[in-house]
Structures are given as C-alpha cells and as structure tokens.
Image (cartoon, rainbow, N blue to C red; front, side):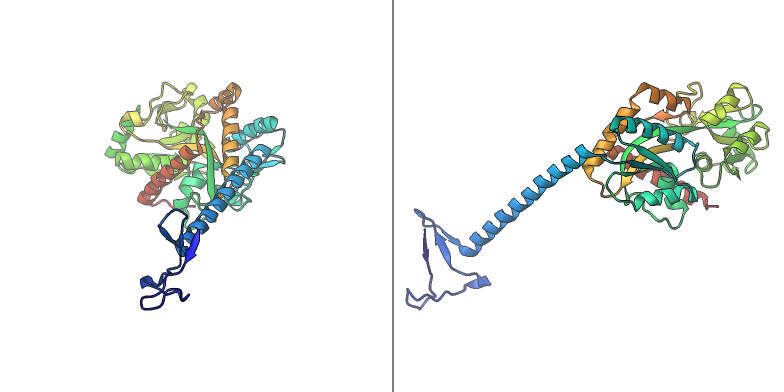
Length: 371
C-alpha cells in the first residue's frame, strides 16, 4: 500500500505541502494495492475508531450478561427480607409468611418477614423504595400504597411506577356487597332504592380511602346514584352494623362475610371481581348485574427496588410461580377468599398502571380525602 500527497493547483508536484479543500477536509489518502480507489485518512481513522468502540461495547455486553447470569445463579446466598407494610394477622401478612416459608425451604436460605405498618402502608412501602436494589429486600405490594394512595395523598415518599420493579401479581381478594336480609334483594333493587331516596341509602367502609370505601364510590359513579358514606375503624364493626340494619350496605371481605351469609344474617348482592368467586360461586358479579367492567378488589403482589438486576427479578418470578402452583398453597388462599393469579412482571406492571388510573379517576370525581 503506497502513500501519496496531492498538491494544490499551481504548486509543483513533489512539494509536501498538504492543502485543504472545501469543508476543511484533509486530502491525504491511501491507495489500496491493486486499486485506484482512494480512501481519505480521516474516513479510515473514523472507521477504525468505530470498530474499536463497537468491540468494546460488545465486550461490555457479553461480560455484563455473564456477570448477571452468575448473580442470578448465586442468588440468594444470605437472608432475604420480605417487607409487609401492614400489621401481623392480615391477608398480606398471612400470604407473606406462607410464601416466605416455601421460598426458604427451596433456597435453603431464610426469608424473614418484616412487618412495618403505618401511614396506610406508605411507611413500609417507602422503605423498600430506598433499599439496595440487590434482590434481598422485597415488598409485599398492595392496591392501597401502590394504586390508591398516589392520588389520595398529596405527597408520597416514593413513586410506585418509578421506584419499583414488579415481580409478579400474587392473589386477588374480591369484596362482596352485603346487606341486611330485609334490605334490597339485588344490585338492581339497590340502585332503584338509591335513586328513589337520594342520600338516604348508607354504605359502610373500613376507613376513608380504603378499598371498601372506593368500591362503593365506583358503584355510585357507574350507577349515577347518591349514597352516604359511614366510615368505620376497620371492618368488624361495619359488618355488625349492617347485620343490625343500622347501615344499608357494605363491601365486605369474603372471609368476613361468608359465615354470616351462611347463617342467614347477611344477604349477598354481588361480588366485586370481574369473575365469580370460587368461594361464593352462586353470587353474581356486579359486572354481570348491569355494570360491565366493574372491578374493585384488594390485591397483593411482589415488587423489588428499581434497578434490581433483571436476572434476579426473573429468578424471583420463577421461584414464586413454582410456590403458587403447589396444591396446598392454592387451597389455603382459596380458604381465605383469595384467587391466586400469578403472572409475568410485565403483566403486573401493566395492571398497576391501569389500577392507578382507575382509582385516580374515582378519587378525583368523589372528592375523597384521607383521614
């Protein structure tokens, strides 16, 4: 390969004074052996630099993938913390402890359940948002902190869509709309009563901004009726007052209502899920009772801090799905009124977004404010 110079017009050939043409491009060039084609040195240099940069990126990608595979294969090698942002004894705690035991048995590494209640679940949820993104701190996520509270509260110490990576949906807990046996016989009758007596029909809730409260607000919105809210500190007293006829209706948990339904002390009007409940298959859904698309469920799912390696998210997802496929786990969840429904991280992420949008609309339309 030979190097030659091109001289400016008017200069004698052989004078080694390079000149610059339009666009300030150097005219030094290379001629390939056996070819008359000239390749500018700048183009050649840029091509070589691009090749080197591409090689470096490829190397980083390959080594990064290998490192991620090693991390996933080695995970977990020390205790894992499952943070439940509610008090012991509730649905989130029961599911969390059952899952922790099963995963611990499979891993040979302890999974410790850490209950951090407070601020309607916001406190514990924020602790996971700020935790190290290494897979060793996992959140038992719930509809309240993740989909309701972002609109209900003006300020949160976390962003549910930015600060977490969903792992999998776990279980849905439909509510069941109940009334006194002498009350309305169906959802249709309830709506007719509310329209004939605006504001006189009352609905209980386990607290302002709770899923039981917003379920009734959603029904009010879809049915275009006015009913009066009667908030309680928990669901126990709410059920008692519905049984005594002091309050017209209540969106109770299935677990809390089923014994009273069987004894004849409560009448079920409809379940709040899109499909009929396995625990109460004879009770129609509100969606099939004239309000298509009605869904107001309490749900649980696993999430990890943002920037947790994708390989660890995949490992957690696969291991959790295996646990939930075990017959004894399914039977325990069904006995609590739950409906197991695990899936992909992407499906759970999409569901959280849709739930956030739905409850934001209901909260803004009803003017609900936190207590």
